[in-house]
Image (cartoon, rainbow, N blue to C red; front, top):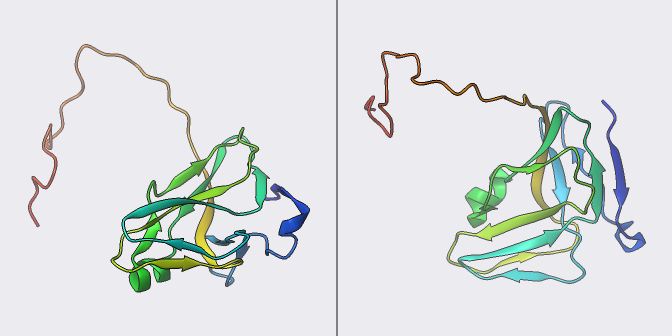
Length: 147
């Protein structure tokens, strides 16, 4: 599948576009297009520019997900994971990055900060009913099945 992509400014020509790290990668690495080092204090959320915009085809979304290495090594992740880039959005992709740790985290130009997965979706239509079909689970939730 080919997806349109453009750099939002010429000043991001040095930032690699999203790419797969290995043949088996499901997600493409996204890199930070910050002008200078960005320090993210503990318990802080920032919006990180990427320098690109995409044209996701109708029936698909781009899911923005955390990188496991940042999560385990630095306690850094994405506040709204997975974030969704809709097929009709044409603005710059920006990453909502949160420092869940206790130490400041530094983002440098070109750092891999997130990953993006292209996925199909289904649009649903509601069928309002007086009551729903019963199941053996019923309304049980929030750990009701035990460990």
